[in-house]
Image (cartoon, rainbow, N blue to C red; front, side, top):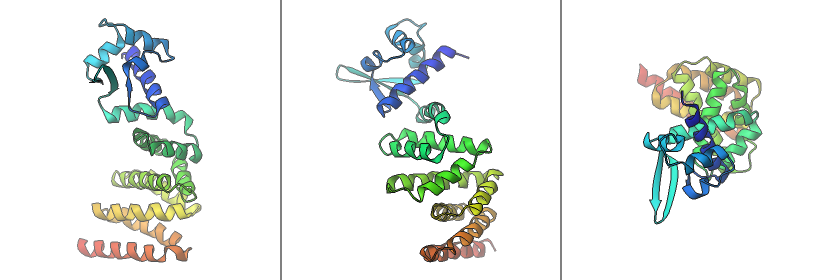
Length: 238
């Protein structure tokens, strides 16, 4: 591999993350704490890791007047590197929701959190996702709550469509510890699964939704809505 390039990209990711932005002036980066980053930026030769990743199109330099701004050329790569940076720090629901709160203004962190939660499920740590869902139901910031719900529902749909065993494990974990957050996520999950025609996964989702929603009169109308969805879908499949 090219360890110098990878280290450079991680140095840049740390600087962008510290500033809550996906672009920074090159002059500001030249004064970053990491000596390796400063040296690479100040070296105009082709043996510079910075020059190499710019030439490869991994980084873009964009001029605004006399100021050169640096950013990643590929959003998904930047989100992955942010996930690499934050994954060791996201050990519980509070740290995950803190990241979601920052994502309200630093959009790339949303994609990073999606990677982190997906990775947790792949590593049989789906309890992190379930904890985030539970905690989101108590989250006073509506934007954070909706983001957590959307991320969880999207991940559940992806796991269901891939027939990943983590999907059933997550439903079982929700059943063991029901919450308002579960109902919101399962409702959104049911809507999306119905659009994809994933009948088996939809039935499993609705079964858990029924079990949890019937515990609370607050969700009676929502439950009826999703019951109507699955009935219509099953009729269409016949």
